[in-house]
Length: 293
Image 1 (cartoon, rainbow, N blue to C red):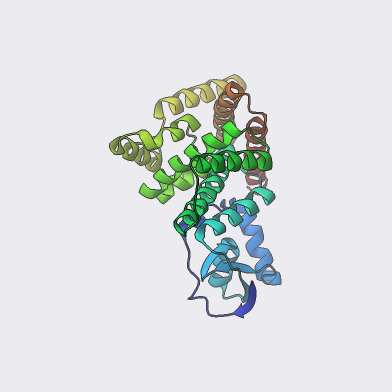
Image 2 (image 1 turned 90 degrees about the horizontal axis):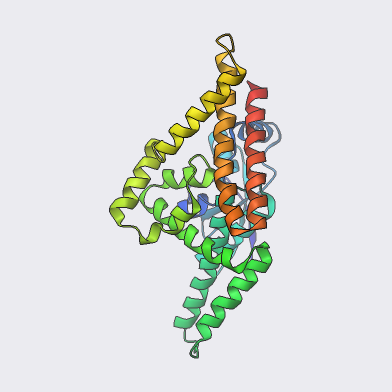
């Protein structure tokens, strides 16, 4: 049974990166507005924990502890980490505009968590007939495909993508964050193959993601294309700030077209819609930054 507590001592709250990485970071302007609202009106929404681990409200928690603002803690009960993961994923998908990579990762995490729960039940003494595990896999894939309105094939790919993202996170949580946030554009096919790559190759990819040199050839082409487009519409008198905006838009658009081409090949309508939505979100964030600036 869930419980509610008003606690001032926050030393018992634990930050778990496996949970935190599933909660997309707010852009700077949204974070600023949230901070301003909490400082003026207090923290109205509860911080949610499971066995002392923070599972929802990381931004609110950080703001409240930094400014010494009281908050309410809701303690939720789950049987396992896998149930927590499913709860977090369901919450995020239902209430946020997510990138295509984030959606694939979340759906893959959900599927893998369901599988883990099934495996735990097996070892807890339940008997399974031959082929029953395959039947479970098929039913789980179909259930999640129906729930998330994608094809069963997409759920299978999402499982591999999420494993690839977790492999990256095991080497560098920061590289994992960059991939999930869209700060670094990485092909989904590349993520699917991550588990089968030699560890040396994986570590090299992660190092390039960390230092910003990943896909440098493609980035150079995109930068050259952006520069060419800028030259069409700007001369030496054009302010540097405007040139920078044009370059940023070109970079966002290049990443969008990469995702769109891949989804077109697979004829996955939901992924195409997700890619379009992510593109719009990125442009809206750029608009807010320009407006504030």
